[in-house]
Length: 346
Image 1 (cartoon, helix red, strand yellow):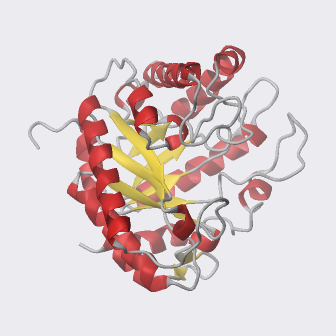
Image 2: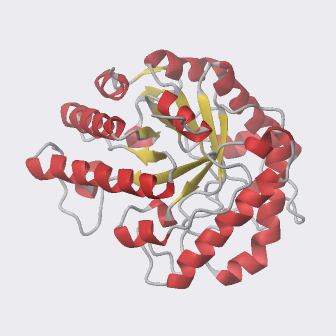
Image 3: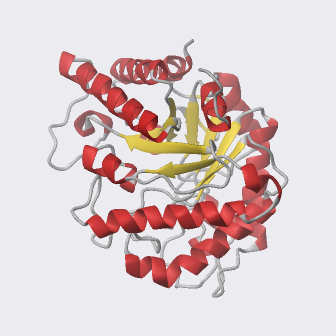
């Protein structure tokens, strides 16, 4: 690669990525609007134990060199949109452990978007909540203003239109609104000072989808610091294999047919073309398969998927929680060694 950009250099260093799922992005149920939740209540609300430094080291020692840190903020904002200092401290603590371990950290705004989120790909939502979104990111950027390039900010996760269409939307205005959110995010981070002037940022396609309609609708925002955008999509195909339950799909516990491998090949070719079009690197920020007592097939899928991605310069992050889990977080040890080895093989 001749004269790689800062974003390209960072992605090229990532061999295997891992998501700290259902933890800092978890939410306590039945909370009144405007009611804040303590950090521990939120972090453990979906069944995972509090994160420890030694757990982060366990992930690193298994072979991962990047962590995506999903964070949900809405239960930690007061009526004016100010982040609870205790929550910001906890996010900063976990982020610090990841960076101290020598791994890249991708920090985001997670369930604030997506299904039932307060951030939607609509013009009305952008008008109503744009300033609150901007204020949230300005606080995050201020807290990490002195943190270097191994910390990447991700604008939001799987933003949907007002009718919660996944993968793609029939509403062209939703795509335009999605692009406006990205421009606002970039402008906010660049104005925040410190390392944020050159911070590497990650931007998802609509709903993190991969269809040609969705990829074609993506518009790269203007940025005063060129070469510092990482594109991002997600993938859980074939759904009948990757999920325990997938309505409307034929369920199976094996993977590896000619059709399966051809579909992965085509996906990586499409994503590579998308990245080349926008002259930016790309990551698959979430992928994985749930356990059906089929470790051999899951490892085969993980190995083929990541190998084909690396051939195109794409870095992948496994989604880890529940039936996707590769680690026993309470015992702080590897749970699915065959899959971990498949993901981290060199």
